[in-house]
Length: 402
Image: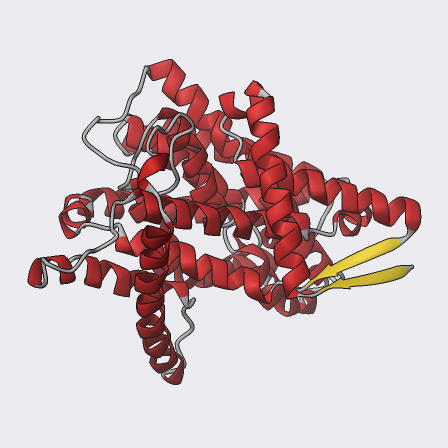
């Protein structure tokens, strides 16, 4: 076995190549756009498969430096904050509460389905919790954190199961959101309101490229870095209080605060919110983040855990689809925004918040903007879910496995 290490520069370079490969393939094959498959997902999964074949045929394993990738996520959510209007946030208060309640309810359902599916295929109930909200809504980080606890309950390969489940969930989440929204939008004839602008990415048929120039892009980067500096300082203070919170959360909040104060108190200052330049920067940051995430997956590590785990995740996917279409979409208003949120929830419930945003971006590029969706889902995912999920996981392990 030959190991090859790709440093941060090479990882970013390959990520850009993979992203543009996805863009090219989506333009070439209408079916990818028809079902709202995100461009970085197309390129990232293709790269992951090629790297898998490279490993199987030539015995070469590639290890990527992912440190820079996480900075791209901070860039993206800072842009989301800069585009947020306080009036929209206040208007979305009821929707935020409903989405939070639905998410908490689904976490409970997800663990119940995981335990039932695990027992059905002859596995320890703890495997079901691990292949439930621990690795799906929780992601790789939560799966790694809880693996030692599950291992104490007799599941020797808990870490491997958790990582494999989170990885498979990421793949499924990348593919399920777009088709769900396609189904809902077509079935109900949904369209955007018409008075909103794109906050993430530009539509496929955008005619506004001439408004972009090097000064606008540099202006966005400058303002974005000011927000990140302030967010980083706040983040350090939060860590000093022994409270764990992702860096992108305070950066997003700083962006919201500055975008709703600076233009009001200093109207002569040019502010980049709701411009095509910030849409391009945010879209590129998210696309590159997701392309690197998917291309760096080690698919060969999943082979030894096939079988029961695939059955459990198949059940999780089915339940997620039914929950989104028949519960979440209806309770969120049965409108265009609800359809976009449905795409996002598919990515969030089985993968991660960035996947959710990528799914929603793919939908809005084709069908039109839904800016409130890009505020509601990250707020639920960043503020409430991690803490709530920890309590529910603990209860599930004690109830089913104690």
